[in-house]
Amino acid sequence: MEWVPTVFIAFKLIVLGIGMFFAIKWHYDQARKKDGAAKQREVLRTSAIVAVVFLLLVAGLVVVTLSFGQMLGLDLS
Image 1: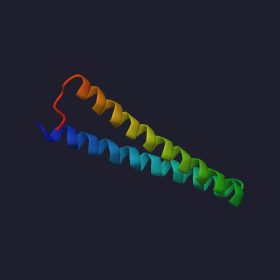
Image 2: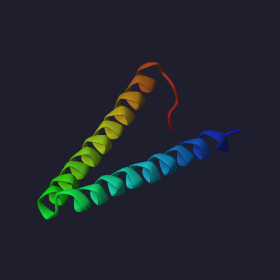
Image 3: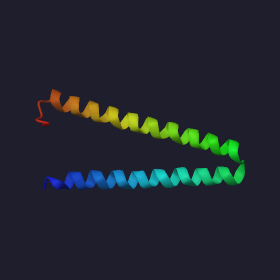
């Protein structure tokens, strides 16, 4: 039973990663067709910003969750 959360979390991360990749790729391809290099750079820059914000939010969520768990006296070692 201990492996179930690990498998589910790994599956979720893989699915979200693939979804983010194809969403960014689709917008990148649309920008290339529509407006050329300037729009393409803007889409790449925006995608990078969104990815960084997402990673920072995930890291913050992990820190808050671990601190909340320790505050409740859970053994997280």
